Structure formats: C-alpha cells, structure tokens
Amino acid sequence: MIWYPYEQMKRMKAPYEIVDAEGPYLYTKDAKLLDSISSWWSVIYGYHQPKITEAICQQATKFSHVMLGGLTHKPVQELSEKLAAWLPGDLNYCFFSDSGSVAVEVALKMALQYYVNRGENSRKSVLALEHAYHGDTFKTMAVGDDEDYHFVLQVYGKNPYIIHIPTELDALEKAFARYGDELNCFIVEPLLQGAGGMRMYDMAFLKRSRELCDKYGVLLIFDEVATGFGRTGNRFVADVVLPDILVLGKGLTGGHIGHAVTVANKKVFSAFYDDASEKALMHGPTFMGNALACAAAKASIELFDELDVVTRVAHIEEIARRELMGFIDSRIREVRIMGGCACIEVYDAQTLAGYQQFAYERGVFARPFLKYLYSMVPYILTDDELVHVFTVMKEWFRRG
Ligand SMILES: Cc1ncc(COP(=O)(O)O)c(C=O)c1O
Image 1: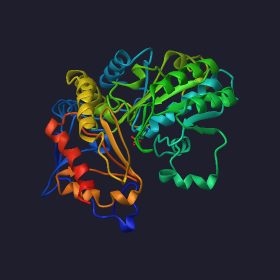
Image 2 (image 1 turned 45 degrees about the vertical axis):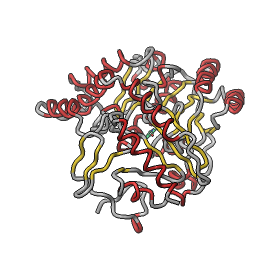
Image 3 (image 1 turned 180 degrees about the vertical axis):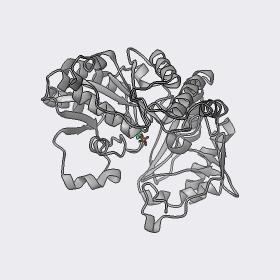
Image 4 (image 1 turned 90 degrees about the vertical axis):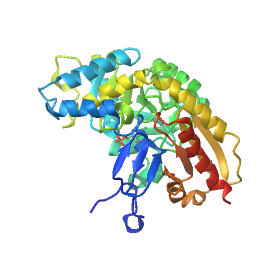
C-alpha cells in the first residue's frame, strides 16, 4: 500500500492517476489537466522536457549512478563548474544531496561546524522566520515554524536554540541586538515563504539582514529551494543580496529527477579546508551527485538562459496582476502576486473545500492548502493557458 504525503489515509480521497505528462499538461485516463503548481513547484519547464529528457537518457546509456565517496565523474564536475560560474559572488563550493530537505540540513550543519572549526562553540543558535518551511527532516522541521506541518515536534516544547522572528525590520534589529553573538546563522526563504502560506516580503528586510549578519559575524543562508530559478521574478534572490550559503533544489533538475545542492562561499569552505580531519564536513548522502540528476541539472541551467526565463516570469506576473489584482470577494482576505507565484488567501479554509475537483472539471490541476489558493505554473504556459488558470480561480468565487 502507498502511504501518501500530508494525508489522513483513512479519509483521503482517491488521487488522480496520471498516465502521461507532456509540457504543462498531466493526463489521466480521461482528462487533460493544466498543471498550475508544477508538481510542487519543480517542473518549471514542463513535463518530458526534450532537452532534459535527452540529457538523462544519454547519461543512462553510460552509467546512472556512482557514489562520490572516493570517485568522481564528468556530469558532477561539469555541473559544479557550471554552478560556480553561473551563481553570484563566490558561491562556488557545491555539496550535492538527493532532496531539498537534506540540502538544508547540510547548510545548517555547515553553519554550526563553521564556528566549531574556528573554536567558537558558543554559537549554537539559529535565527529563522515565523511561518518558515525548510523541509520535513528533523532539523528542518525545528527551524521551520509551521505547526500545520510539524505539530509532532510540539512534544519536545520550544527549542531554546531556535529563534523565530516575523519579517519586520524592527524584530530583525531586536533579534540581532539580543542574540547576535549566539547565532551561527540566519536562515530564510528569501522574499517568498512558500509552504508557510505564500507570504511575500520586502528586499529591504534581506538587505538589512545581510548588514546585520556582517556586523555580528553570523552566516546568512538562503533556502532558495522554492524561490530559485526565477520563481520570485529574480533569477535567484541571491543575485540581489548575496548569502554565505545558498540552497537549491526543485527546479535544479527542471523537476525531472530529485536533486539539490548546498553552495557555500569561500569563507565558509575555508573553515573546513585544513589538515585536521575533524574539520571535514562529515556528510555524504548515497545519491549525492547522481549522474542522471547532474546531467538533468546541467540541461536545466542551460534551458534557463535559452528560454530567457526571467523575461518570461515578468510576463507571467503581468498577466497574473491583470487577471487577479482587484478581484474582490467577501471571502478573500488578500491577493498576493510575486513573479511566477499568485496566491488568493481566504479567511476560512472551508471556502476552498471542493476547489480541486472544481478545477479538475475545468481542465486544471490545483492543490490549495489551508487558506491558500495559489498557482506556481510551469514557465512555458501560453497566455491563454495562464488566463484559464486564473479564470477558473475567479469562477470558483463567482459561482456563489
Ligand atoms: C523552501 C523549501 N525548502 C526545502 C524544501 C524541501 O525540499 P524537498 O521536498 O526536496 O525535501 C521545500 C519543499 O517544498 C521548500 O519549499
């Protein structure tokens, strides 16, 4: 039996069975569905993308996987070189993992050990955001702040080494003034908090975060697993404010195969680069640097530039604003739009009950959660397809 994610299995409705997927469409036996959420925001160029599929197939004719323990190979070398050249600043040191959660774990471990390696064992705390979501492994749950996902952790009570603040400048200043000397890192989903409710905040907050991290000697970690690869309208938010550690996943492979990367700058890497073996980063997921995933990721990065994704996302945002901004209904609390993400927040989660089936019957796959009806479309949608996604959202409210 399959144990499905985030579901009460006892009363879960039967999932739609997908028999094929091509471009932005998912196919069931009898329906063609425009995927409005890109398979958890990862399939950014659509399904069965020819260039990515070809890269995977080509690599599979050689070998699919060899471990990185004592071995290396061309796909992982090429990808790390590509990332180092493509990413901003001196974010050049790539540690690969099989999922975004693990890559965040690695970032948090790096930040802690960065100080331990320098003999500063007192920097035990992590600063994170209210409503943060960084994955479902234990440490990522702890730095996350979403009880809707992680209520099981409540049995431990509040973790004294993790401090959560809202995305407000005043709270930021106060947190650094109070805890600045105890923190090893400040981890954020920059500009857009996804699973915590598609919450959007200002670049000024990140700019000030960078200044305060520098002032107090705290590492700044950007978890761009969701925001990276164009989703906020920036290629990466890291292009505007440079973090010390950047985490990428999801769109890294165009969503074709699971993989993620934790990219450190020279300052972080240098704290590990030493004759002492205990200063090494003791981490090694079996499938890190998987050859198929690396081939897919390299193709995905090339596509990003070839398709001029940043311009494309600006166009998606423009259409979303035209179609949704100003749409009023007494059940709607707020409409938020940033880059390739549009969200309608309602007052009462019950308002969205039944939306998935409603959308299905109109040829759209959606998966609202809690009070959030949102789209994170593949970037390849035509204007008509985009308008259809937003029209179905509006029809839901108009039907009474
Ligand atoms: C910001 C962020 N970080 C980390 C993760 C975890 O990634 P994965 O599901 O690949 O473990 C997610 C997943 O949605 C995410 O949105």
